[in-house]
Length: 240
Ligand code: PXP
Image (tube, protein in one colour):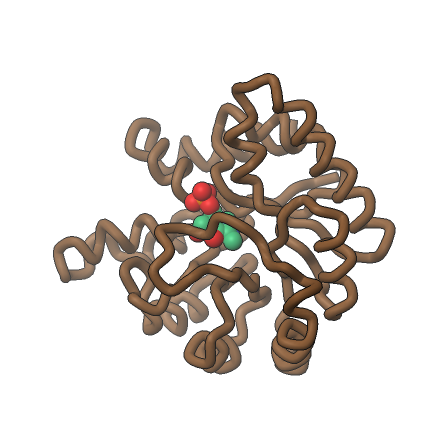
């Protein structure tokens, strides 16, 4: 199955914000990522706006031709932003306001009522809903129960285990959860700490992987290889 690459451009916004001007130009970077082969653009606005700012979202919405994915914790301000701008997909992430990065998925059982309500609001606006979960069968079933269209597996645990003897065990959990999700009618995304070393192995062991969203490693690799080469290198790992 073909797996799409969505490029998370948060880190580009970090560089831009460092000088307070518009260099690099985030909108142009999004256009260029698509030109270079990206099949989606992801942004993760956080309440402190330390990378993507809320006002980047309407500007990006106007230019993104592939899939526009906005991810974040569905606090009221985030929901207002997403409902106004209607990206193709909204990925719900339970990150704390000051979190450095998201490091775990939702407890879809504990938060069933809340996630059901949020999912309905987004779907009513025509937005596909993906829920960020750990590779845990109960959380996958919970995501189905709240009405999500997709789940995004948190791959940080996999990435940490990749260079250790725990790699096979962790991968097996992701593979089993992927099969379960497919059986119960959920589409599957994945992301976090995926890179040029671990991506092919993950993809080869995930039978129904629709999309990966990759930011930190991809933008870091682009410093060495350039954005065009880097995107092509990631695409090659995904679609062997
Ligand atoms: N998916 C989610 C839900 C995230 O929060 C992030 C980080 O913003 C990513 C994917 C991408 O992770 P990374 O930057 O490590 O590639």
